[in-house]
Length: 309
Length: 309
Image 1: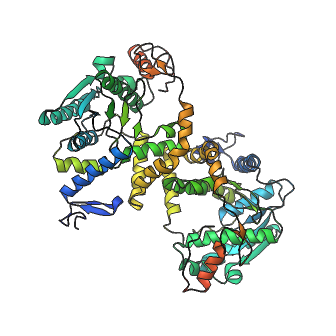
Image 2 (image 1 turned 90 degrees about the vertical axis):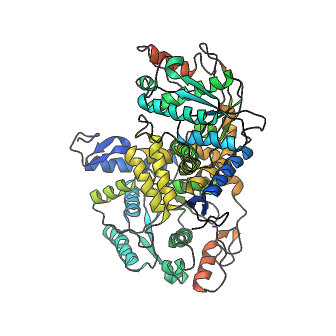
C-alpha cells in the first residue's frame, strides 16, 4: 500500500478518507485537519496565546503538540483530579511533555483548590463522570480567565464528539443538541472553548502520538468503565466498521444541516446570567453548579439540589 | 413473576415498560397501545373502512387482527412480489388468515400488473429493498384509491420506525426526517397512510401472534439479508439491551420534540405535483418513480434516471 501524497510505503490506512499515508504525510494530514477546523470555525486568532487543557492522555497532548507545530504559542494547564495512581501517572505524562519542550504548564489540584477529589464527589452524585466534567469545565475556565487567556483548548476528538451527539440524539434533548458545537463563544465570565481535533479520530490521535514519540497515559480512567459514553462509542465503532466514514458523516452532517435549525433554540434558551454568590462565576441560580457540588461534597448531609450549569 | 394488571402468573415481561403481563392482559395491552396511536395521531375515523397492507408476516397480520378486535371493518390487500418460494408461502399465510375469518382480501401481483418481479427490478436498481419499497408504496396506494379506501394501514412497528429514523439521523437528511411520521396525510392522489403499531416492538407483535394463534411467515425476506436497515436494528437492539426503553424514547422523543422543528421544512420542500404521463399518479416529474422503474425493468438498455418519489 502506497502513501497517497508522496507514493512512499504507507504506514497507516484511513478508511474513513479512503486513503493511506506514510508517517510524514500522516503528520501533515493531521496538521491539515486541525488547521481546517481552526479556520472554518474561527477557533483561534493568530495573535492569541491559547491555553490547552492537558490530561496526560493522547488527545490533549496531541492537541498541544499540533498547536505548537502550527505556530501557536500554546501553554498548558493540568488539573489533578485525585483519582489515585491513575491521576498521579497522568500528571507525570503532562509534566514530562512540558519539561522536555520547555513549555509553561499551569498546575491546579481539585483537592487543594476545592477541598475534594472526584471519588469523593462521585459519592454525592449519580456518576463520577458528571462530577468530573462539571469540575473540569468550571476550574479550567476559571484558571484561563484568571491568567488572562481568552481561549481554552480541549482535546475532544471526533469519536468523543460523535458519542456525545449520539447520546443527545437518543433522547432528543434539543437544548443539549443546540449547545453541541466545536466552538463555544467567549462571553462575560466564559473563555472561548474550542475543540480543534474534531476532524481527527481516536485512532488518529493515538497514531499521531506514536509517530511523534509522545508518551501518554494509555489507561482509561478507572471510574469511567462501563459508562454510557463508552457504550455509544462502541456502537459508533460498529457503524464505522460497516460503513467507513459514517462517524464523520454523522457529526459533520449535524453541524452542517441540523445546527442552523437549532440556533434559534440556543438563543431562546439562554437564561439571564448573574454572578454566583460564592465564586462569582456566571450562573442562572444563586450558587453555580460547581459551588453546589463543592458544598454537597465537603459538607455532606445537606440535601442535594438538581444541578444544571 | 406476576401480571401487573390482574396478579395472575405472567407469561411475558416488557422491560421497556418495566412490567409483565399474563396472556389476556398482554393482548389488552397491545390493543391499548394501538388504540392510543390511532387516537393521538388521528389515524382512522370510526366511520372509515381501512385497508390493511398484508405481507403474511407477523406485523401486518397482527395489525389486521388488532384493528378487527378494536371494531374496525378492516379489509386486506396482498401484493405478490415474485420472490420465489418466499412470496408463495407469504401469500398462503395472508390467504389463510382471511379465509379462516371470512375477510375480504384483495390480491394483486407485481408480475401480472407491472410486468416484472422484485428480483428482476433489483438487477436494475442498487438494492432490491428500494425497488420493493417503491413498488409497494405505489401499487398499494393505487389499489386503495381504485377501491375507494381513504386509509391504508401498514404493519410498521417501533423497531422498523426507529431503524429508519436511525438511518436518517446518521446522514441528517432533513427532508427524509421531516417525512417520518406515523401518519402521512391524505391528499390528492394519495390515500392516508397510517402505522398503528408504532408503539409495539417486533417482539410484541410476534408474541401477539403466538398468543392469538395467528400463523405467519417466520422467514425474513431472502433479498433483505445484510441490508443497512437490519444493521440499524441490531445496533438499536444493543442500545435497548443496555437501557430498556431506549428505542421508545428515541422514537417518541423525535416525534414530540424534533418534529415541530422540521414541519417548516416539510412544507417548504413539497414541490408542485402533476399527474404522471403514464399512470396518472401525482409526481414532480413527467413520469412517476414507479413508471420509471417499470420502464427500466421491462425495457432494459434504456438509461436509468435518478428516482425520488
